[in-house]
View 1: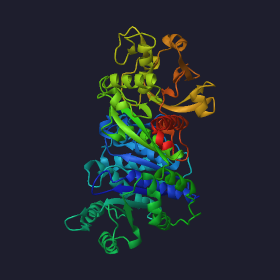
View 2: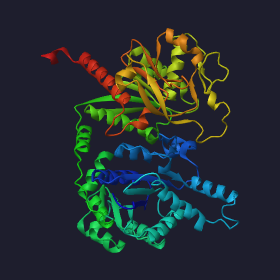
View 3: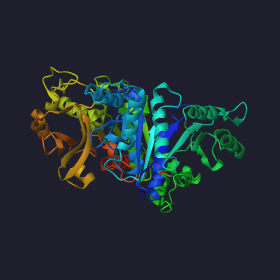
View 4: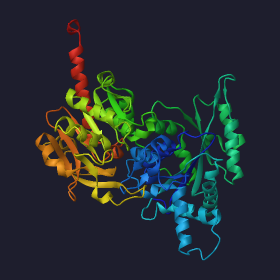
Length: 550
């Protein structure tokens, strides 16, 4: 292990959405496989204290860690690549930085001095750069700086990085700048000028990038690499090609081929401990890219226009599919569009139905309709958080014959509040970080779908919700066939529900998608995908023409 941790900072230029998170995760994976204890953190320049109050249309999904932090979705990539849990320390926003500084000022900790961006905000940013290592012994800490170089809101982070690099020394701290080489079809060539201007912006802030990673849709010719190196003050081997990949999980191989990990270790004065053993990763990518069969899962949600709103669910389905050499095609179905007239057309071809999480009443009727279809037509069903709650409401309405049954989130005056606000949430009025968040224990009943999947009776899963199944109606629904197969042992809250006499019908109050990684696919996603594959095989057998059997 290194005597002190080495720091790598990833910045972005030219345009947003170039993939800094995937670059950071891929490099971290390569360094991890080389034997270095590596972790990633992200600093986001928006003033929200955390992403928990952001609309999914604004920022994609809100990812939740074991310790209950509501974080940026890139932390999901970090965990899926590294197979290491993240925490509150892995994601910092400008809002949290300013909140901390203002609280200190109110306590008089600055002794009446004028509180300014420099040095107070930048000092707090630098403290947070190192805080992640306070109770750990990481060899390498990768820090992704959100936003794009030149953004006003990113300036304090760039200045803090300049100071940190000067204090810590260039041999202990390097900067990787991710940029874009656009291809102009009319000219028939890649253009380097946007990258040059992006690096110039960094230089104006006092930072010379050590390595340039260039996103491109085309191979970068030797003369273009030479031009980038010459005009951006880096060596030729420090210009790294980052081509578009067919899957994000292929990026580590592409960066390995470009020797990014070797260049990084050399610049940090670290000797390679071992050659990276990518056998497991290779097998996974091979199965992902060369499936032997395919299934179609309908993802019914209210934010489906922005697929990042359900990023962890989509990736968990892909990972579970790859485990069985299946291509999982996701049919994105907007729950607001689903109605009795088009239900059969939108759902009839599916091998499985997943009703996704969400907040608010919009689109709820469509979710209930999808649940009813899955229950009555024996289509494998998986409900997550609100999806599980709507499965309970559908059961109450159509099996228990309580037509007005509902969640008090949508109808506080319903006669059958089968989903109700948790007691601990009754007096909570402030949004952001106040839900039931993070990892909680769940006791799993034997001889259930859940136990068959987990193969253990005690699990820990991550939560993000305020409403829960109302235990007042629990026994009545159990007598009619609703199985409560998982409960929290401390307060008896229902965590998993199932149905009898159904190929696969399961809902979870927690979010299993937050714990599914490449090396550890989540058992419930595996079980759901397996059930969908069985249905697909059965339907295929039924539709084979007689003469095809020879």
